Amino acid sequence: MKKWIVRFGALLVFNIVVLLVVGWLTPARVGWAALWAGIVMTALVIWVKPLVEKWFRSMAAKSANQRTKAGEKIVEFFLAFAIAFLVWIATVLLSGVSIGGGIFGAFWGYVLPPVILLIGWAIYGAIDDKVEAHAGALYDKASGRTATTTTDAAAPAIPTPEAAAGRRELQDGLTDEQRRMLDELGNG
Image 1 (cartoon, rainbow, N blue to C red):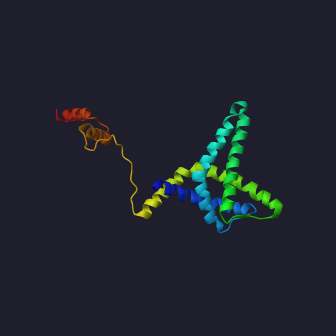
Image 2: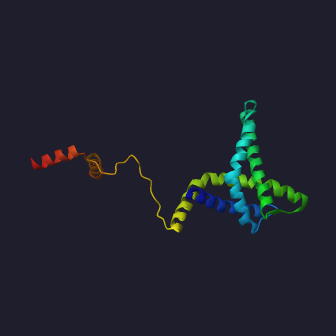
Image 3: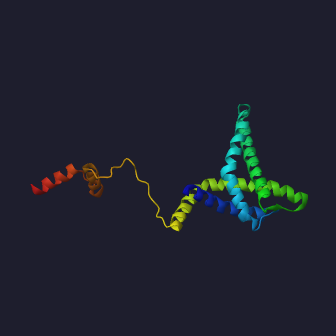
């Protein structure tokens, strides 16, 4: 449950920032609607986008053997753009975001935001592990828990003589046998 909350929260903050950028750079009117639109977009990205992406990719895979590498890259771009376009349309329809600027503004209000979303998703994909780890630490701090470290399940709970010898070797770089030989030299 924590993993989903952290992922949703981190992506929500990122999506709100992306929506504000969309509002600044395009004829889309975002404003305070960015909060609700961020929630809508985050839910779409987490739960709906993977399903639509899988469906689009399965349709495109039917003709993949007929395309060149360059053609495949073009198809991948258009698939990603189509998915971003659908997420943008759903976000506009389900939130208070509106598109202004007449016919010309409407065109750019529907074409540019998916491009900005694609760039945002690429950036988030590159930094998501770090962002989610930081958000997880904040979640633990806010809930009063301490961050737990994972331990190896195969590690013995009771220290064995071999483990104790290994720790001593790490401290001074000598094995037990070398240490015994040095002790004999010192006594002899």
